[in-house]
Length: 295
Image (cartoon, rainbow, N blue to C red):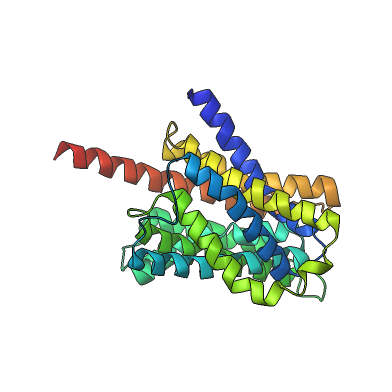
């Protein structure tokens, strides 16, 4: 695979992840039904992809790994539920920007849970994200979208916890296997609450759910993992910072969710902070890997 092809695949993956809120808004159903449908179609897509990659999720997974994967699935279910609820209450733009705060939340949680020293540049990222969220915060009037932003930030917090959980399991389990098991856990968590709502879905709703599960979960994850075999982590981080940009731009075009000047400035600060945080973390990982090979 050439670097140009890998770069194109990564851009497509970022675009597909950015479409998550779009498809979620198109489905006329409660958030729990959307999450259930997404997990179902994601499993249907991830199973053959895992087999094709030589990774059979149902084989050679220890009980300890299954426990971590189950925890990750619960966190993923919570992340999806709060994100789609944010989309329904505040719109795609505010939900996406609220969720985009998760890199700053990861920094704070790593310091709290793993007792890792928070560097000055990381504190700067937290400060920039916080200021960006203040700028995009609507008024406190009813119907202003403030609740949507708050649900989006909660979604980002749950995703930050999921990232830390996956940090523990990543060394023992392949990424596609992690995704398959976590989607299984999501389905088990939400199916009892969504079962009565599934028969009421129309044909268009099933189509959006299929696209959400297959494209925004299965295909996007596969493209992301495949591209990392060629591209370095810093390049991936910079491109994936475009995910909220794609989502907001498409929501602007499809639903007329026109961002205000304050929202654009705040969103720009949040995206810049994501790029800075991800690239610095990737650079530190690469430096650590080089140092390990020299020992």
